[in-house]
Image (tube, rainbow, N blue to C red; front, side, top):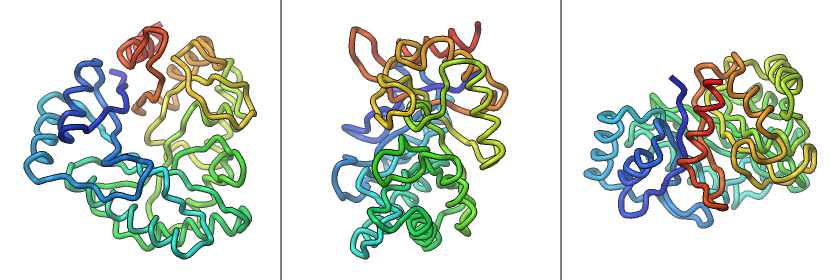
Length: 277
């Protein structure tokens, strides 16, 4: 059974994310613990955490993943931003443990002049200071690679895994990979991309996928998501990706738009149709 779900809201209580997921007929998912645009601590009470855990278990919605704040920058050379990022990451990891959520997903961020090696060194040093609870794994997300942002290449993803003492794994984002220059629009391109990921990083590190189509051409570094099969990755590429043996047991979470009369429910169903074909 394919594991596919959506990024859902915790508005009104974190347990509402499970209820929303069920409305979309998703069976795994992703949440923010607070607005991703601000520095804010997760504020999840014991009762709502218990309700989230119970709803998750009773309805078989798993695995969940927490996505960290967009302000977190692991690669930064700036001491104040480094400390804020470290503090925010620690609190997200603690929230994951409280909710029995196994994954915390984070972008590496931008090196802003420190250089690729300096940025990766900075990221590893932040990650190594974290006290990651048992049962929680940090996932490094692949990036679209614009500006000085790192994580757009598999070499950079491997670089931070090699540098860090933490047991890190990877969340690949299809739209980000496509924007960064990995052509997923054909079966041949998908196969080549997985082969390269395996050679550079190792498929054993692939724990989750953000499954999104792209509104922009391959290699443009532009990150804008489209409905599954209706962007420039397209139906052929998406079908090849979701049926590739490398992701046979890897969960997919969608961050597709709600537009043109199509929502998460439509996209989740489309993934299931492509997986079955």
